[in-house]
Image 1 (cartoon, rainbow, N blue to C red):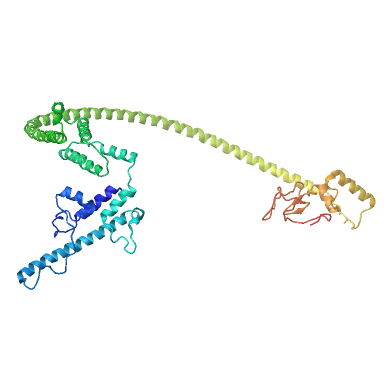
Image 2 (cartoon, rainbow, N blue to C red; image 1 turned 90 degrees about the horizontal axis):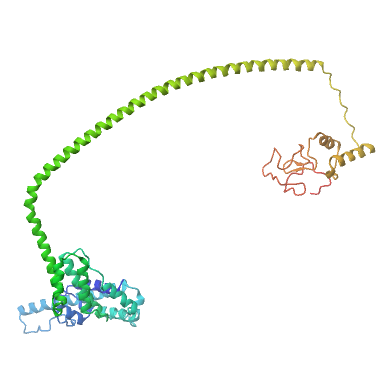
Length: 446
């Protein structure tokens, strides 16, 4: 919040304080404590006198005072006491509100030992903040002046124009308190520029101003002149509205008749347009019905053709089924005849257990080196050899689920059809990844 805005809010609050006993207060309450005594006396024309704390009884009351006088003096003293305590309470509340409204860093230097902020007045807070924290540099001064010379609201009402001039006066005085000087000539120049820019006055109004002598082109003359122009214009506008009322009454009947004729012509044109649209719609409906009849005929012809094709396909399917049954019967007869002509199979003698002869071992070794040259270290036995010959197992392969030499010529980790939970496709016989050791050769170390 800006310091000036804060001071204005404090001033409004100060004027609401009831201090009727003090002549300098009147309707301004304790405003003098916020804006300062000098400024207060200049604004109000009242002479400020610092009040003192009244005694509990009026000092003029003694033993010789009559009862009537005693009653009047007591009432006066009671009013003085009430105003005093009201004033002290208001000042205490205002200072507390000020401290709550701003950051403590802006006033903490005013704190006194033991007493704290008890003896610090509102004006001391404001002056301290202005001196220590509101130092105006060149850029800030330029910005404040630009704000002063802002434009006027061009919706020119009598009060608006008067308030524009009052704003320029008030802000000029406020800036002067901060040593920012706006001259009266600059203020007048800005006011007249806004009058020309508004374009709400007639040419003769501007000519009358320009024809004045230079000594007559003062601030007071400018504000009075253009505010009077606004008043006259408003009065003329009110009278103009009143004089045209009768003429408007006589013209209203002709306007109503003309409007009735226009509405009649418009209704006639609308009726013709509706008739044309209806006829066009009926033509479209007729064409649509004709097209739908032709489409229905074509659809019936297509459905008849499709029904004939379906009957033909059903007959072909029945003929094919009859041929399949005949072929199945012939196959059954051929199988039965082959079964009757076949001899019983020769019983195979079980192989003897034990080490094969030397010649057979050499033959087996030769077979292994020829068929599986990469598997010369595998422990072979007759069953393994037979399965390898028949292509029943993948000699030298490994499957995480099935183990070594898994069944199936191309059986491996990726090709396994019975993968257990946790199966790993990339497991090998050298890197089993915790897989099965089923059919492990003797030369493989766990």
